Image (cartoon, rainbow, N blue to C red; front, side, top):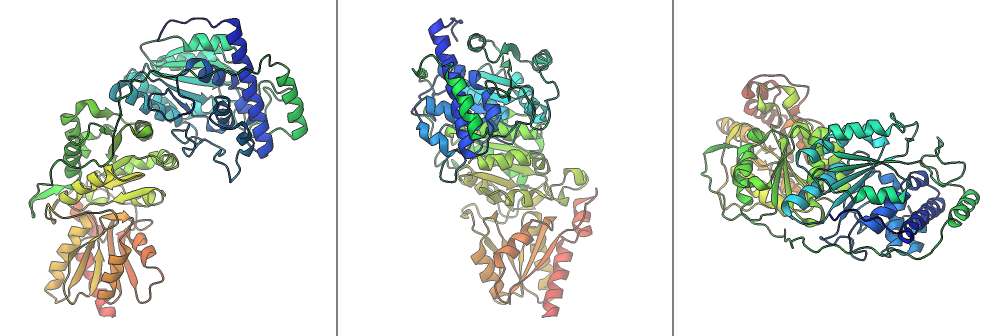
Length: 623
């Protein structure tokens, strides 16, 4: 970036005028809506004016242009001022601002990607900087482009640990194209923020995390211009001392005004006061970007060759995942992998070995890892695959939930599911993950049962919109599918059938193999079972399940290495509810498990071949 050139007085006054127009728009919009956060907007008015009309480079009529600088509003409740900026830039009609929060308008209470200028949804505080890190990493290391990333945070959200995970990440990877602006307006929602206006402490904390940190008067456009003009070989934090409700007489720096619009008569008076300070109505044009981001196509990414497994050979699906990911990496240089220091257990290390420049080690910070992936995926720049133990995704559930609201296309692989991991014990066993991912609206849940299915799941996930979760297991199990087997989302497989099957048994991963072993036991007693592999738990193949149930006198038995709540049994029960003559019997893990050998644990919790065989016998006898 070129050295700082102080703007002339005319430009500085124009920026002050812009800030005051943004204040007025924010007050008008929230008063019209009867809800919103005008005081949070007013503290940030000068910051937004300088950022968008002096510092940033972007095409105002093409907000998602790949060459544009990026902006993330981490303090998403200040959305009205973001909308005001895009009206000031000429992208939104000014009249639309008065439709804030109306069901007929795209201007939601917090930013969402149905707005062309919003890359990631914010509003659950503490997540914006992680996404901004993903964008900055992509810009520096994958796109190798000159666009910069700016993220504005509120001081209240600096209590969130995820912010400091992101601060550490940015420093480790020297994201010198990233600027965080901390809007230190002193007041939180119900109380002052813990450090109030002790900006020197914020500065020391940012510096301790490896950032270049500058304290500014957040209401001085000149100080802001100068701070944004400083280029360093490290990420920059601009610590802006501001006042909540700046410019609103009787409200500025006062408690109990968070999230409260001004009553109409008060708003009219305040707007008049602020308007009297504006010297010119002339608007500043946005500065266009340098056009140096490469064009990217991430559609239709296919494996270079079919799977090469041999039926009967044994491999853990976690290992098959690592092999598949490394293989897919050869099909597109936009496939990237992220891991949380578990790469030698999830086997994403295979990807790192073959594509070291596209592997991001996120260390033990799963919340931030998901946010980084969301940032990397914005504007269709990459196809990210995040890997860790499935149990540890539960700590990132809020980030995953927000990724769905962000309409993000990210792929998450969770290994070490269920009691079948064995001796490591319950802290490492994912037994809630299916329930969690099934509850996410845009999520596809893959649960492959052998190496072939795993490889197909990885390829399908790369081409499936929304969030994809791939559940992989630790034990080695036999390959049951031929390499040319076709797999599709929402399409189950009948793995075993005969003309006179008594019960349909649905298992996945290790329990599918236990079901096949149970079938061998039962065959000696002249009891046949039909064994189904759902492949995707969401969406579920309802038609095949119902067809199989009808062929087995309406009897379905589900067996899963997961708690009863929210897993395969509940998914199947939901799919067949209301169907006459169909009953679902469920086997699952009923309580918090313990350490032990995998076979011992499957037996203890009643999900092994013997338990399946006994459950089938009971169903047949009952009939």
